[in-house]
Image 1 (cartoon, rainbow, N blue to C red):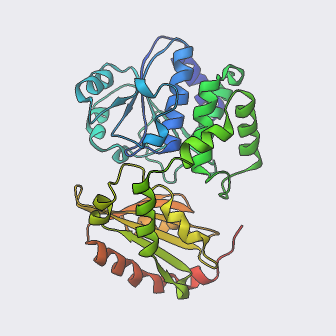
Image 2: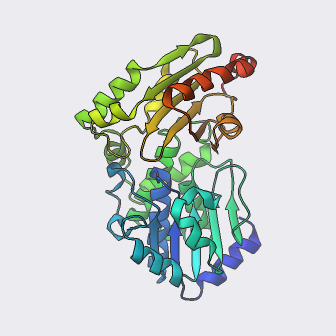
Length: 342
């Protein structure tokens, strides 16, 4: 953040505000961690703040302090709308285009109050008066840490805030293994542990709590894996029937796509998941090295994200989506065979 933006934020927060904090639809660990950390910080400053999520999120994220105070726009629509309509200040976290918030886009677009964006995704839209946008950052949670530090309050981080921020950094860096993890990221994580984040416990809560259904679903995804050695690519599919048989719960497929990257020489991994309720195939893309899945998703699957992690969707059937995906790979053969991991 530049000096002018920091001063503008300080001025806004020097007065009582009715603040709504919004993450993207289908919020992940970084989205929930960053919004709750900011919520704790603003509440501790005496502000009237509320987190409103567009829809539900995985159970393995619902242990964080403040979770019970979050409003779900789909489930608690009237309360959520009332908070939005009364807001004098909006924070949007972990997304940079209002199209990422589903049905919440319409009521937010009607507001004439200031918006503050904190986000690390590429190609931000110009809807916020104050934009803290940095694609080099590991996570929005690391940016929230910086945001609090820029305001001179890093020493006020509580164990609850530290745990929320640590969760988002841990999940968005793949447990600190992605290339976006810097020396500064590790220094921030160390400070969060000093402030009370129990790193071992947090890792266990997020990654080590499985159900039989989730493990059986993983088995189905691995059994469906297609390995395309000519393109250093692997992809998996999951049909709606497979999801139903294994009693799919939101968040159950989190991390499945990464299994493709554990194969020797595979640098591009994808999972296609059928969602009959929405009438689409949801897609997650992952890569290592310099192959940009953000560019690939934007060009072909109405998506985007980061260079090594992105999402997208398809209106084709599951089989047709996979076939279309395979048809694209010859155009990328050179890039997929001349990558560098750095």
